[in-house]
Length: 113
Length: 114
Image: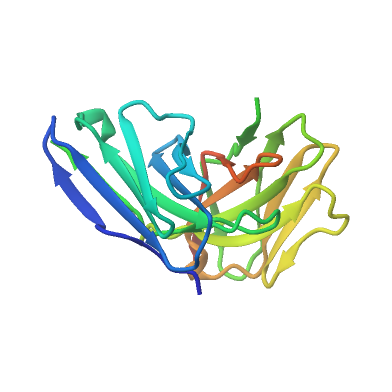
């Protein structure tokens, strides 16, 4: 079974802090993704990566950056956290095959005070 | 722009009954894929079923089936014989052609009552 592990289920940080959300997958997947989920808005793509050291902006990249130094690890960085970044963050990975689903971690509920 | 629309914010169904969750999509691509995910209150996203745009048969996976009507651009999820454990949020998503990016709908919260 594919395992996508997010480092924290719940996280509380203060405005202005630099926040790191970590994601690790154990299935040698090329593709990795970061989404945020807000009520009534569904999941929105922040950043994604098709390879090590490669990154592409998603639909809502402002205020975020990412790092992928190793194939199995994809980090989301909030450079200077703000209250409007309070949300549920979900990481996913996939092989990229046409009928292959993305596999998700359990999510991180991030609160910015 | 590609878009997924789920018009039912919430649905109720009695245990053992069937329920249909609606999903319509908008795309100009000829090739695309449609996915349904389940999200229980614990938060994880669970893949349920996939339908490719060129698949002639409706996809089925156990109690889940996808009612795919290409001309109407709809991909409704049908859950047969509902169980209490089916209570969750359900998301419809579309894969963009030639990428692995998913576009999600806003979700439908299903509640199954005894």
